[in-house]
Length: 392
View 1: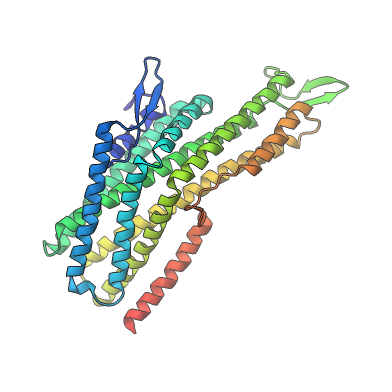
View 2: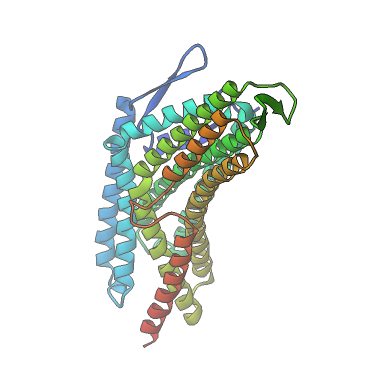
């Protein structure tokens, strides 16, 4: 094994260490002798490092703006507006995630980790080994891929421009983009934990032996393995209801922490896709440097994939919660289910309907595949308009 298979905090070590490097860990934890963890607030070194990274990002943004206004080649047409807007949104995301982590979101992030540890003990324990291994490998791959991609993009910039442009601008821009991407990976990781948990609750319900028939006050069991009593079944359903409500509270916390950041990220990705498509079409029409076109295509794929992953993972997690409702309704369709179990199942169904998992960009629009459809349609429209304006 490449990692200590103790709990979910061990499995998320690749993300934890890279987040610490980026100043995105507004918490610390202490391992006790019984392999449990105590979540604490950020230590003084973590706080100082986060503030240092924040100052660097702010300085990089100011430097980028000064350098941009000094370049006469950007002072024509609509390109300057797009570039300024894109850079502002990129650096705003970095500064927001760093400062919010130290202020408004500090306690929320600690609560999220506490919820994850509780959920692990109550929901994920039966499939913990597979989840740990899958999580560790997935996070390792994502961190390595994102790190390699940003290094390659920085190297390609240096090679293409050959020292003609300011290296410091591109370096600070790359750091800000890297910090943003790590924050997105954090968000996706939390959604994956929710998805695993919903899946396990659904499987617990499907394998629950609650198929009692009550005939003449005699209980008959359809599936004879061990024979649980109706009271035990009712208690188990109540326990699953309480676990589902914990998942709902965790989802609300995640949405509260990352909603505003996802709004900025989605806006930035949209602007980048439109701007890169315009640059690619212009470069192809003017037969510009092939390396520049390839670099822009790689960036286009990266930003498109990042936004697609955000919206798709949110949609899949929401759908996994709805699948629990389908399973509850299937159980209710069994004839003559025990009255106590039926009561719990009806309460469970009402709870799922009233407490839906909903991830939004600060409440402005939902993070799901319907938004992806709107983004694609809007991007295509703006690309055509910008291209026509250029050729007018």
